[in-house]
Length: 241
Image 1: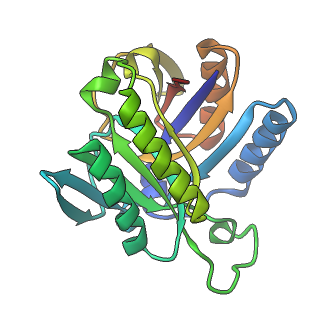
Image 2: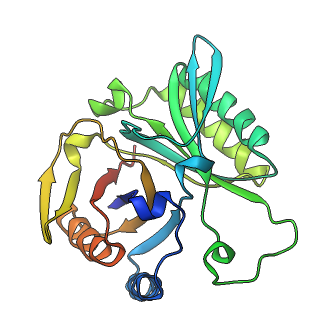
């Protein structure tokens, strides 16, 4: 089973402060171990909300709002990592996505690259990589399987984006009823099973892991949360329709 583990923003992350060397080393060790054990699939960190946009589609119209955002009220329904030349190009692909789904909201922003945190030299004219996360809709919250025709159309769009060299990763998430949240407060960790309401905190990054069960995913998420020292981590299954 595949799961997405999302950690939420902290004040330090929102201010764009570089992570402590001990944190980077802890994450590196966990990922190296998880790759060796064939648990870790992929993952990305996101830059502060001041560098992100909220995109809302309503009746065929697109409204873009620049960050920063104090409250996102996010319930993530799915994600896509895109490699593009500009934000405008990314928005054009979002337009195609919205043309299939109809009214939809998403948050989109650039991912943290190795050179952003001093782990590599910045290449000349690097491409822009962005993470788009769309809001959970009523169908997905009820775990209703997608319509076969809609799946076919989405598959065609995914193929088009992949052939264009744009799409690097994508997936939909199961309902919050199947997920869990880990809250950190006062030096204690509390695991709460879903369903749950909207979270006001923005996603700071994610990891895709492959483990046998939700319990195993929570165990991995606890280890990750202890390292990155955040207030909340969310665990959600990635269904295979």
